[in-house]
Amino acid sequence: MMIKQKRYEALVYALHGDLFRYAFWLCHDRQVAEDLVQETFLRAWKALDSLKEEKAAKAWLITILRRENARRFERKQFDLVDIETTSVPDRKSPGLEQDMENEWLRRHIAELAPEYREPLLLQVIGGFSGEEIAGILDLNKNTVMTRLFRARNQLKEAMEQDKTARGRNNG
Image 1: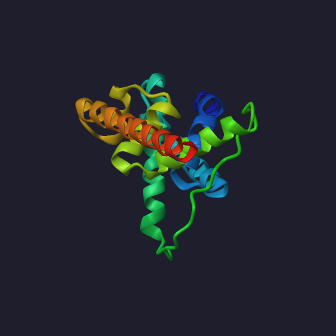
Image 2: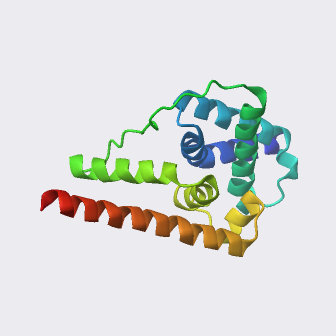
């Protein structure tokens, strides 16, 4: 029991921040994100013996978190309302211009189709490789790499369109 407890505590300590950031990106609500992470770790505790390799822990936990998030939608019937996406304040940014760029990027990532947004977030926020993302999303690695490429291209195109539009407005 003691070994399991130490192993579990090490997982929580090492990966809580990464899981919270990913959960927040999924739900845009701090309280819901904390609940998702807590439920993820509860399920991880119950199934800890099934984790054979510590290297796979992050991907294993992200998979649990994604399933927990999906369960949230199975349990609830939501009243759908059009709202702006919530942004997380970046307290370390150097200034207003950086804040504006960060907000632009968050908004455009949120506008990506889920099949492009999710692999990009797993790579950027989670730090996962293409192969790890393929395992988490249960996709072929080539499919993941294609989606990452398309997600980045869509962001690049949006940036170029914005620059072009700003150029016309300033001229």
